[in-house]
Image 1: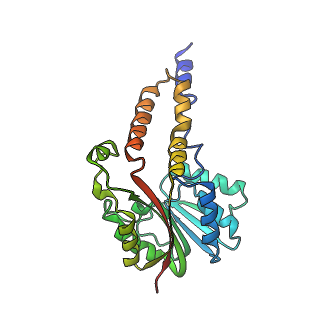
Image 2: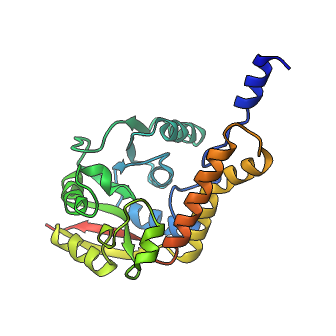
Image 3: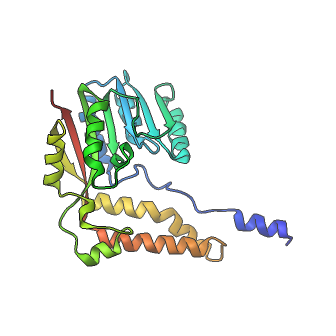
Length: 261
C-alpha cells in the first residue's frame, strides 16, 4: 500500500454526526406533536428559531401552518445545511430560511412565534445563570404582543451533590441552573405568563443521550485502529460519565409563554 493509499484509508469512514437524532434535545415525537398543535393554534405567520440547529421543530410548525414563514438562526454551518436539505425535501424551502449568524442583538423580530429551545445563552454575553434574565428580555422584544414563545430551558430537578457536580461539565456549579419554580418566577417577572409548563421525562432523556452518541459508538466499535479512535473513545467515555452524573438531576422545561400586555 502506498503512502497515498494509507492516507486515504485513515481519512475515510470518519465518525458520522448526530444522524440518529431527530431533535437536538430530549423531545419525543408525542411531545413534539402536542407542541406543534399548541403553537400553531394561534395561526402564526412568522416564526423565529433561535439557535435552531437543523430546525426540525420549526419545519414541523411550518408544515402545520401553511401561512407561515420561518427564519432559523445558528452558528453551526453543518447543522444549517442539514436544515436546508430537510426543508427542500419537504417542500418548505421557499418558506424556511436558515441563517448563519449570531442571535445576540438580532434584529429579526418581532415574530408571531419564537422558538428558543436550549439556546437562551445565544441571546446575550453573560455566563449562565446570569444570562437568563437578559435572554428573557430579548425574547420579550423578539415576540409580537399577541404571539407565543416556546422556551426550552434547563433546571435542577433537585439540588445536585458535590460529587455529581464534579462529574458534570467542567466547572459545573449549583448556581448554573434554577429550580423549576424559580425559573417560572423569572419568566413572570420578565413580562410573560406561562400558558403551558411541561418537562422532559426520563425516556426522552435516555433516547436523546443514547442517540447523541450511538452513531459514533458503532463507528468506534468497528474502527478500533483508526487514527481518530483514541480521541473519539476519550470523548465518548467523558460524555457518558457526564450524563451519568446529571442523569435524574438536570431537567429540561418546555414553557409555552404568552407576552403580558
